[in-house]
Length: 217
Ligand code: G3P
Image 1 (cartoon, rainbow, N blue to C red):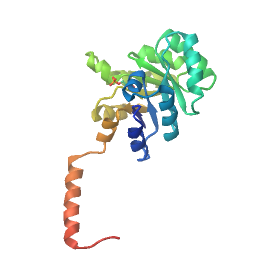
Image 2: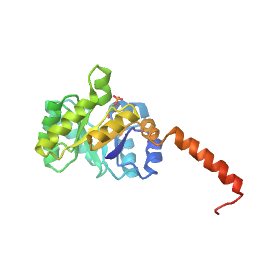
Image 3: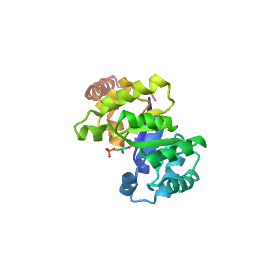
Image 4: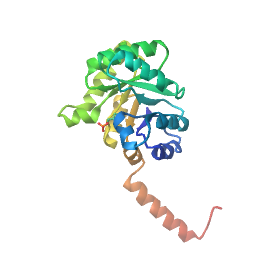
């Protein structure tokens, strides 16, 4: 399973990239606004830090303008993936860009039928929003399971990029279902490293090592 981080905070991206465990980055207009930085500049900088795909979202609602925006974003770096919304115009754009070999991430997916359409439009990634479905009384993880089944039935290459993940349990469940990629905020990814027994065990080893009076170096 690939790990993407869902942020436009360059310091957080550098920090996670230094672990060697980061496979890509996702952003959206909300995260760009939160960064307080210029969209094109921040995407270019992120692309220089991470080798994998960096999702940059178009903001137009019509196909023609989406294509123009995508042309600007594609010029920033070779690892830019164009993010489009799951609308008719978004999927028209997805079809056109993917036919040119561009990686497209189709976002704001809330149903298995939407995911089916995105795969038919040649999406490299589909982004179902788990947390937002949970927020609205639905079962976000069930959607990941349904999409997995449908994509496997037809051998679609589109990768399931589970998004809007809010906790470590979401990530664990996505791994069990077989999501291809997860994206989550830095704090959620960092929480995966933690276990109280790891901390306790380490403290005991440190204390016992000190009693030996030895040093390795
Ligand atoms: O990548 C989509 C994700 O950013 C949405 O997350 O927590 O705003 O629902 P959230």
